Length: 555
Ligand code: ATP
Ligand code: MG
Image 1 (tube, protein in one colour):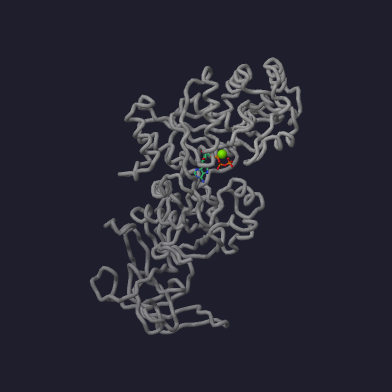
Image 2 (cartoon, protein in one colour):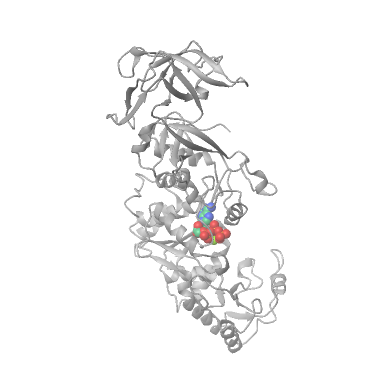
């Protein structure tokens, strides 16, 4: 783990943490803890992957072990270098470091081939030449045993010859597969002679055209774990039924891969108002429904980063949701709260008006300016923010009410309010356009009430930006991408897309924003946390993405 990833002070316990502690106590792996994060480079990482990354790298770091980053690149059609690079970038962004332990399943293709040959020689694998359809129906069902393939009895010599010819490219795709010979009557479907190798005449982004047979997931994964000396192979719950096959592969190839890793399953993360399947996220990108994989509404790590999420907030979220074996649905509000909790003590403050209404201070001279200052954070004493008070300024439209409701202490006709870090003003009259929409508020200020001067105070305290030194910018106000909690619960998930998931606004910003680094989220006082959009050009104006409101929104 890099220095940027502080381990939490007293991490909550969970069954995997306990199990590893127990193993260490019993010197099960001589005290070693070697984990791995094994993404398939067929899409961008999402918040679900973050759970796995934090768990795998976290367990290794806590136990002075290693976590490997291993690309599970056994499906060449869907994989690419672009995905691979984005995965590396995001693991590092989250604050983790694989050090020298970067691996590729494709680096083991020769070893895996030798393992397959070894199985054939033991009479534990055979080349099946049935059609895909015949193979499928031959597998049986959950209530009905499968049937042996007519090719199950092929001799070792014939199998070796055919498998070699498969490798040499002598056959078309689908003509043959290599299957494990286990048990066609097993109650566990995964043990009914699962496929180990299939023919694919496709280019691989790393091995190029060296191979035209590719290993299946369970075979490649178990043996890659063993080859790397993984002690605790942490995977999601869907693989529980695959564990007997995982163990079978390692058990019967132990002459070539002696290390037998332990597979441990945990529940994957599901987040409300979100889809997490890479296939669906890819469709959103390809159908132009979002602005790429890193659209700030996407649950991808690239999207969350662009939205303003900090790596620490995501690690905090992952620690808070815990790890267990029961299916996990987490409210997206938990993620948002982790961000607020991370940013509150450190995000710098500035004022910004995101829905501006003009204010004229009638008793303040047109050509004058009054210097005001404030600190970048309540915990900082020095007032490094400099901005001016002037005759013309902007306040938030909803900080004014023509006919104030009960308990409304902000600006209204005849009422006083304090402009934060400046003076108390009183609204005298207003101007509307033809539609009755307020265009300008005419106010007076009380020169004896400058903030910090010890003068009188009023209940309301609102933010503002002067027209004299304010900076024009744009803000994108994001809402949830889907309108319902589980977009997968009924019909096509795309029909549940929120048509108002982004709203663009012209805003006014306090000039001290220029003093702050652009890649850190800031708090717009009383409005929310924002970050400069990393993709938008600064010209003609800067664009800020709203990461999250200050308070939990009501839905
Ligand atoms: P697919 O296999 O359909 O492409 P995947 O989500 O399994 O999708 P991988 O790249 O194989 O994608 O995932 C890498 C690792 O991340 C796996 O170990 C997987 O268990 C873990 N992972 C993926 N999604 C989640 C999730 N929602 N919660 C926790 N872990 C996850
Ligand atoms: Mg997977």
